[in-house]
Length: 478
Image 1 (cartoon, one colour):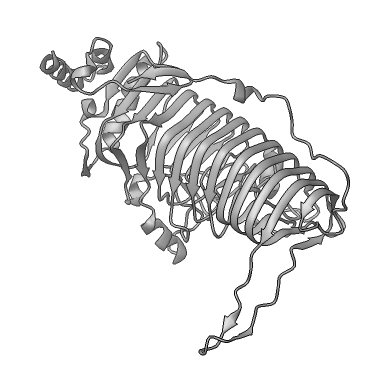
Image 2 (cartoon, rainbow, N blue to C red; image 1 turned 90 degrees about the vertical axis):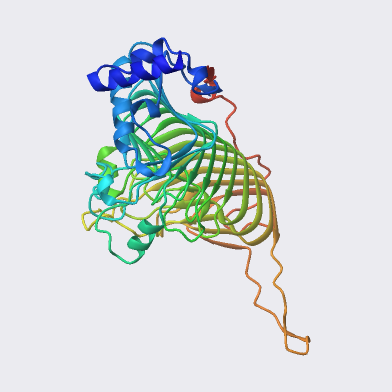
């Protein structure tokens, strides 16, 4: 049966007809063991990358194989959906585009190796809400890309996508790049998106970037990049509505989660917020950035972000709000609870002077509104500063509420001379620095700054369930 099927596949390829027709009558057990996985939708049609000439030897380019497979599957995807299985092996590839009603399944022991050849990443226009590429110029298309899609899944048996970003990082740091580095996975203008059960490594820049999307599920990701790699953010929902992030672990050279919605006048004009974002059971290590960052590109607005059960280890800030004059819009209705922190520079860090701009066309009178920010039920150990909170002069951040928060301050080791006698110690840093903010605090240790006076309050956290949190994934099989 298997030899017959393989011959028929070759005939289909030669004749240019739909190889996926074979998949309808296939017995894939002869080529791989069936594996169950969770997805928003199961698929009627299936194919394997090797059906289209793919070679998992780590050397042969599979860009053409991915493109051919997805092009063929897209023809039957409207009839019950289609899935492409990437079997174990090392699959070198450049950029390729996804399609609707489609699942890309990356098997356990399968590794997608991103090509380091710039020619494999065509240049595309900047996002309309940014005006320019985030590194400048146009944008190299992402490794896995999709736009205007419905019902698209990128998942696996914890298979790996390795961005092999070191050459991109070197060229970026040296100023050799004139355009913006590719992301690992970027999906635009799409609905019903799932990215889950994968290990993502060493993206040239951001790892996961859903943009202008609705109903997005991001779950069970492990994202790893060197802590000194530039701009290797983990998960960046950007102008997305109704998104959930679950059960994921990120080690990053930048923010582990960065919530965005466009940059200055371009984001204001585009006007699409990120809202109704749910984050649960998330762990982050980011010594130079934040566990959860809001901004700095937030010019379409950020509203209704809920984070619960977050673990921060050796990170610069637990929660950071970044904005500036020129951004406009708002960051409001933010709710974070059950944040556990170990070895932190800041628990909370807010700034209204994060001054990068796309060009000189921004309006410095476009002032952002930061209001109704709620933090509760948090514990930190080995913390250098609890809060570094700085709004905008004459335009303060308002409605801050902090309750039931305890931070154990880091103990500075005293210096010793060569006779091991203690002779000096570093100056103790104050636990709070607050300017141009207002709000309240309750049961906060060390005691909050004077701009957050003690009140008997319990900071808010919504009790309703977001629609995206009600979505139950189906059990599917390869």
